[in-house]
Amino acid sequence: MNVPLFHHVHVVWGRTYTDFFLRFVVPCLLAPGNVPGMASRQRSLFVIYTTEDDAQTMDAAPAIAALRECIRVEFRIIAPGCEGQLAGNVYHAAAVFHREAIRRAADAGAFLTIWSPDAVMSDGTLTSLERRAEQGYDTILVSRLLAVGDDLRPWLERRFAGSARVALTSDEMVEAGRRCFHPFSTAMVWGSERFANRWPSQIWWQDGDDLALVHSWHLHPLMSRPTHAAAEVNHSVDGGYLQLLAYDGWKPLVIRDCAEICFIESTRRDYGADLMTDLGPFDLDRFRAWVPTALEPAHAEIFRHPVIFAKSSVSPARTEALVARAADTVSDLAAEALAQLPPLPALRDPAVLQGTRQL
Image (tube, rainbow, N blue to C red; front, side, top):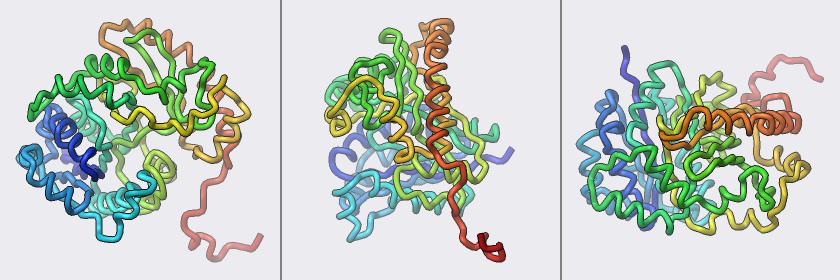
């Protein structure tokens, strides 16, 4: 069996993010079921897009030295003159570097993994990606638990305690993530009288503190195998990039069970506050108006898949009951979304029009 080639990409800059990356993200990467457990690590590449100053800081850190013992690490320096972009929309800035990463992976015929610098992962995440690639999947889609960073930090400090390698379990991550559940996620719980109609990018259903599920329009492509055409992404990779992959005939897999792959993303408490200024009951008319501004046809299909965050003590019957509770709403909203979207794919190569008759 051919061992796949991976390009693992992080875009990280600024003291706050580089500190989080070194203290919490890299120890997760060094868990036994992540980088050290990958058969492909000797021929793969770990790429960090950052500024020159941040590269110097990270390159001197023991965490990076430990990572280099497992995999080749490369810093890609943000060129002088690009720093101004970093002070603007962070997603637009990251997209610049993601485009280069996508092109480089396409050149190498590599699988691409794109990570958030403020998200910790469960042990076994990377070996799961490698196994899924060997099974023939070219795209792995995931969701995450969004947590208030100030609330999550004490747990992170206790759990990591300066350790070089930390193997997080999905059980402890669900417990911590649900305890620190972000207000922006709370504002997208179905049936809430204070629903975030301005940006309903995902919808949550809950059953106690130990079980929740989300149907998300914008699942994150944790792993993909891009072509050069897919490098035309002009915003975040969970937007138009997914549709470009779909046009290229992808074979995607949504990770439904957090026991396989689990993420907690730590962010500021006021994240999304500008989208929660007029909360109210779910408004179907506002949803219909939002769809063309935020979705592509591929997102409507992605939305149909539940992602379940449950502790191992939760019975399958409870989980399936919650999935069933959401099913009719999910089906109706996916159909509504498709009804608002144009049925024709975007024209990507004008050369295909040569020789055609004028309409």
